[in-house]
Structures are given as structure tokens and as C-alpha cells.
Length: 256
Image (tube, rainbow, N blue to C red; front, side):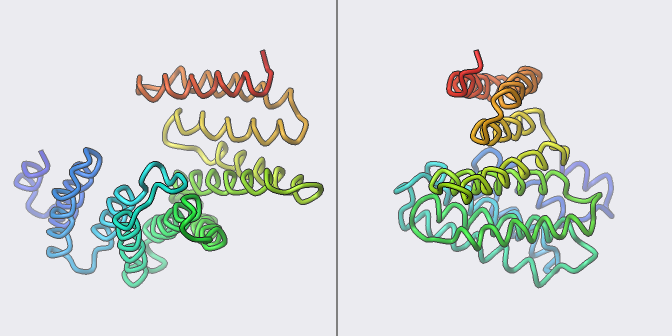
């Protein structure tokens, strides 16, 4: 279909066609085909950042192991993460103030690599991850109509980092971190995500933070809202998985 589109519209950007093809292969886990498409995209336009973003994404997906779980990354996965970071860094030399969304995605990509290495226990790059997430949010603050979905995910990631840190802290430090987690989760909800599944996930984060802050009523109300959002999703497998997670959260928070 993409080839037919290009044939019907010769002025359509050749590089973009290859990038879209690479994106489709990437979603199917066809990494070699995706990489070949991105290579063709770069050959067609050396100044386009899109192929680099695509390459950064597929390298990240191949390098994340078992969802960046501890001890899940071997040398091969770490090499993929290294290459992912190189591609995201290379984007910076090709974009300026006129392409804020691209710059946001590159910053978000760098943050995910640092976060993955940290969660897997192979490096302590939490602060680097936080800086890159904040950089993405700073760009979006200057361009509020651009990249709201990326901003939502950045807020959600920061909420998760704050929650993890809060669980290892105590006293006033823990409270401050739980409050920060709640603020980021709420910002993710309000940002306007692309799917109900994402909104449901953000609301669950908000519920957990509220519960740790002693606001059980708000937490349980959020659990109900998260379940409603998940039930109205369109992806059956993801919906069932989320509903199972929400049921477990309901039990954990003793909302029943």
C-alpha cells in the first residue's frame, strides 16, 4: 500500500515511505527488515531524523530483555541499548527548534535506555533518565500542542521512578517522593494519551501513590475509573491483562 501511495503521488517523500515501512516491520518484530527500510530512508535523505528514531526504537526493543528486569540483559542486549543511544544522540545534530516533537522523542528514547540499564541492575543511570525525561517535558512546555503523548509517557515514567525511590525511603523523604509520583501520574492522565489502555495505566499509578499517602478513598475511586477505561479499550488481549492487574490492585488496596 505504501508503494502504491508513492506511485500515485511521486512527490510524496521517499524517505518517509521507507520509514513507515520500517515502522510496520518493527511492530511485527521483523528487526532486519525494519533496519533495511530505515537504511533506505537514510539513503534517500541523509538529513531526515526519522530513520534514526526508528533505528533507535528497534535497537531498544531488542535490548530491553525481559522488560528490563534484573539480570535479564546479556552482552547482546547491552550492545543493542548502546546502539539505540547512539541513534537517539545522532538525532540532536539534525533537529532544531522547528522540530520539537522529534527532539522530544529523542530525549524520551535516551531516558528509556538509561532507565532500562538502571532497572536491570547493570548501571546506575537513574539521574540521567530523569534529566532526559525532564528535557522532553521542557520541550513540550515550550510547544504545548506538540508531543502530548510523549509528555504523558514521560510523566508516567517519572511517576514510576519516584514510586520506586519512595518505597526505599522513609519519613519526609518518602512522603515527598510519593507526592511527586502522584503529581506526575496526575499530569500523565491530564496530558491526553492516545489510548484508553495508557490512561488506565496512568490512573493505576495515581491510585498507588494516593494509597501510600493515606488517601484510600481516592485510590479506590481511581481503581474503578481505571477498570472502566480498560473495559472500553479495543485490544482484547491487552484489556484482559489490564483488568487482571486492576483486580490485583483492588485486592492490594483493599478496596472491595
